Length: 358
Ligand SMILES: Cc1cc2nc3c(=O)[nH]c(=O)nc-3n(C[C@H](O)[C@H](O)[C@H](O)COP(=O)(O)OP(=O)(O)OC[C@H]3O[C@@H](n4cnc5c(N)ncnc54)[C@H](O)[C@@H]3O)c2cc1C
Image 1 (cartoon, rainbow, N blue to C red):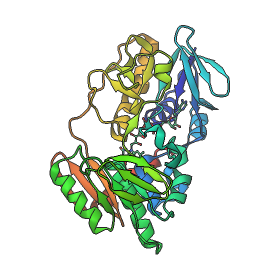
Image 2 (spheres, helix red, strand yellow):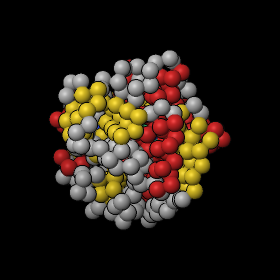
Image 3 (cartoon, rainbow, N blue to C red):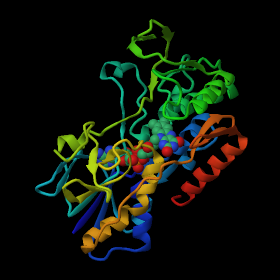
């Protein structure tokens, strides 16, 4: 019997720890990922700013797999044959499974016509090299006013200041900053961002990107040296292509047990799934980490013929957003606070998370 874990996201990293503690007899377990390292996005802003080294933000999944007795395969799954219970890979392999689990994250939702002028930071293992080049370009332009866009734009700004480069960083967003947060938090982050030298263009949608300029639908024209597009997640193509149950955006549709709807031998967690019972749950690392708590237990329960437990997301979660120079914004419900102590807390949580894996 083969159990195959596809992708080295948060939930599968936790599975590797669980398997190491309680090995499963009579099961051959595989983990497939296109790169032997998994890069932790919670520390991307700190890496961009030069606060962390490469080795501090990445996890060696191959090593972690081997320690758990799991066979690591460096490859990418391209299709699932449900009837034949087989995975097809980019390298042309056919991998049979009795149970498969997907934790393959998401892609970035960028219009295909802009592709040539965008910086490609996904899959996650592209990020480290790409951002190192990008933070030095003459006119960095970040599109997307959500948490990742704001954090990365502020981290580039902080890095440029420290390294004596003109700031020149622009953040463009079609709404206000942090549109899913309270209006108090949106106002606060705008003041912080402007105070730190970031040029913020709210209520501006990008209409066109030519070789040198970004043109907004309101007629604003801004110089750019390629654009970092961070407007939110889009689904990996694999689920639709394989005719698996999907939501309207192509994310794998699962039950609260993290099992694909109608296909109990297919599991999923993190950004790549949509829970049928909670279709509007934001796609972020917080929920991926929470789902990680029950994924392996549910896979083993399924194999043993036992009941799987259900995932219920908490209503509020602690959001810590780095703003540069070792300061961060804390949000919990309607409470917000911005200072160096919050960054220390974020650093403690992020480095503590990494310590479990490296
Ligand atoms: C710049 C940026 C900053 C962010 N900062 C934060 C933050 O501070 N806090 C937060 O909570 N969220 C943050 N996010 C969101 C966060 O990155 C995601 O929500 C989170 O990583 C999702 O985790 P995951 O486990 O679903 O998958 P991921 O962490 O994306 O991992 C998926 C893995 O699967 C592999 N994979 C993909 N396709 C295949 C395939 N076909 N076959 C095999 N393997 C495959 C990938 O290479 C990758 O290793 C940020 C996102 C970005 C873009």
